[in-house]
Amino acid sequence: MCKSELNASALEVNPFKDDDSNVPSLSKSESESLSSSSLNEWEYADNYNVQDETGLDYSWDYSEEPHRSRRMEILKKYPQVQKLFGYEWKTKYMVGGTVLLQTYLSIAMRDSSWPLFLLVIYVVGATANHSIFLAIHEWSHDLGFKKPLHNKIGSVFANLPIGIPYSGSFKPYHMDHHRAQGVDGMDTDIPHPFEANIVRNRTVLKALFMLTQLAFYALRPSFIKPLAPNKIIAFNLAVQLTYDFTLVYFYGPNTLLYLLLSTIICGGFHPTAGHFLSEHLEVVRGIETYSYYGRFNYVTYNVGYHNEHHDFPKVPWSRLPTVKLIAAEYYDTLPVCECWIGIIWDYVTNPKLGAYSRVKRMPKEHQLQQLNKSVAAAASAESDKKLR
Image (tube, helix red, strand yellow):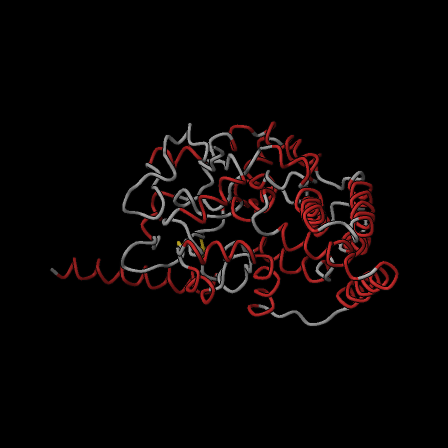
């Protein structure tokens, strides 16, 4: 049976062992072995509010996210990594082939029997559309073309088989996810407290969340940080509606149904959807980003190389394995997700995992306030000591 147990050979922990905490702790030596740039994990580990019988909360971290410091350290040691920066010219041809495939199948399958219709959607359509989502992700980092505008236009074209306009608003939110990973009110990748409080660790609600998580990803940002309309969003909307209308007008509504079901299913109980969980679900205490090196990377533009991607967002998908090869000592000690299917199963069925299983941090101004309070408290305690 496929399991999502993290590769803990270096850490010697079982990420799902039965103990009283939400996630297992690393020993001091294990924590220090991850990287010298990890900003004293052992010292701030006690600041986490783990899920237990007293109540649920995110794991709050009062340090910088780990990727910037690790990136600087790797570049200092291996400056050749910078030569991997740039765009991947092959992506546009792969995307073009996928768009044509989905357009063809939406027409070819429109009169098929329901069992065959749904089977093709699950096996081919959902896989293809998930691949498209991750091509748009690549191009949000300007990794498909030399000019940023061309990446935006390419993303609008890639968006066509998804059936709903998406690419125009994706980039701003995704850049916030990188610049402010885990920051409350900025990183919209993390479940909002309202939805987290509903889902919690409840198996049935976690299963419903998995079925509809793309809707959460689409709607959550507009509630947390609404975007003002702009030209690229309007262009995305106009092109998508034209494509949808053309398909329905000439070939009937089942063409659009094929595409929409492919989109809905690809974000639910589908193997490729495991990456939504595996990337940042806090399974090992204090570890907020995980990589996956399995076969589904072949159809998802290596999004499984997620630590490498966050460390070097200017490196395209085709060169991320080279980053891992060059800086192996930085990545081989980190826990990884072994299986996307398994992480979906574990998320739904494991009572220690839930919507709150994410690392969050306060905005910098709040962190400074917290630091000032701590300094003041320490000074006061020292003063009281001297008076005694």
